[in-house]
Image 1: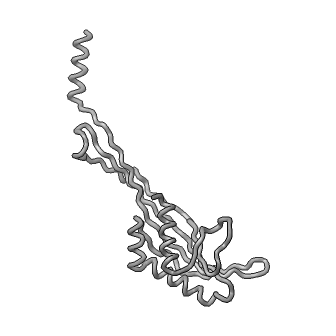
Image 2: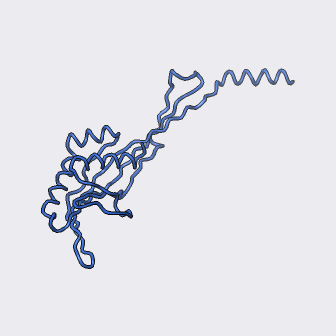
Image 3: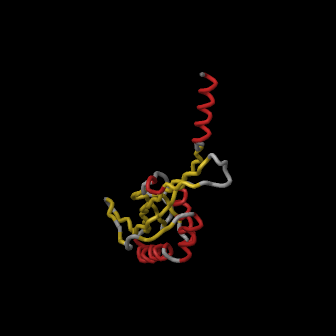
Length: 176
């Protein structure tokens, strides 16, 4: 599962918990009925894989191979927004608060763990209401962080130096 698929799976679990639909922010298409939430990836901070390369000998492989694993940890900040019309504005904060609480709850952390990510809220709930030319779009929102690890495994053939030197000597004797 890619990082994007993991994020979408977590948003889907959150959506099921709070009982409202969701969309990815700034996409074309029809908007769901109010209330709904949207998510957007704000930033990604990938750690360097070079700092985390581990070389091991795996007994299940040949003697002339080693296993190299590199682990790249990343932190991705996601913005969540909850939308409503003026009639639902009073309940909208409660929906955002329920989502905020769930992300850092045992149930939210377990849902994230099943998907293979870590999550934590990184900001407070904000009133993000905006005015469009003739009307307001009512929304509350907050940001949260997703931590993920990408593991790359390579099986590398090694060289038996002693056997190689002996082979070179034998080739030299045969040729010369």
